[in-house]
Length: 437
Image (cartoon, rainbow, N blue to C red):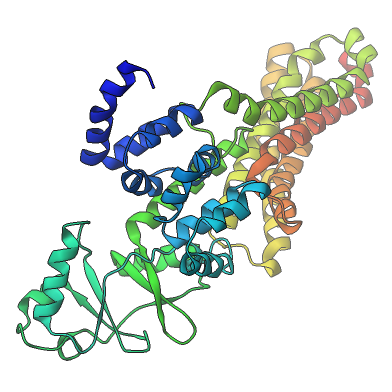
């Protein structure tokens, strides 16, 4: 390392010690190798504390490129939930090396996490929770809280467990401070506990936390043994992160891309979808080519092609947005799929009639040809009805075959609405061509 870089080491270390979350986030704007150098320049324990503040994909990339000695030290400090998430994102040749860097206890905990479904409470909970036994006194509990506060911010709740680790009570800090110092926790704890099972779905957890307005909720197994805790703040952050990833995926960008991601990484995320989009554009162009001679004779048709295709795209995007939200919120049971498809198709049809009549009237007034207005009206009705159906069907179909509905629904939808809009407009123009010249 150069002398200039050596002189910056105390500043870098101080930055991580005083504002760890912001320092960790700043790493994500650096190329992977430079971020590794920064983490190598600070104590391993401090580098390990930074890892929970990083995007999991980026954290995995850093561990993959670190010297083995440093990655071993950091891996040993990772929470099991984060360790399991990182493990899933490592290449196959690195997974075994990562597990070998863990203690036997940490290996078991990571494997336990990997047994839970992707979006379940067991996969996203934190094991960093304050727990006490039922038989200790309030004085002893407060003393332990004070000791713990020197290393980390104290939690709002403490959970009370029996000798078999069953969750039997909860203490908030106010109750603990108001209770007699020599009272045992089992005599002052709250026994009316809300908890969730480890296999509970993330969306259900978010709804429960929102409804009950809790800061956190304990996670238990089928025998009511305490496993960890899910904090509302983390849930909100996860839901926001997932929403932004889905938004990026819908428009052909990578879900892991960030504003200051390296240029090469951004190109790898975007370029394949741009090629797919180019192929779909040629498909639309080929549809136009089928009617090349007609357009050559009636050139006014070329003016209105974007109108029909654009309105179909907008109608389909509205349907797609509503259905995507319904899938995320688990609002679409299997038995109501056909009802949803019928509703969106019918809505597209009715909107198509209204918009088609308006478009046809404007066209008639503009060019003085009622038949051109009629062609636009009919094509608008057909395209918007198909757009409504496609906007609902595409994400549902992709989810049913195990694909991510957000990944390319928008590109497929655009292709369908463009091709159908062009084909219906020029198809009706063929039927009425004798009246359009």
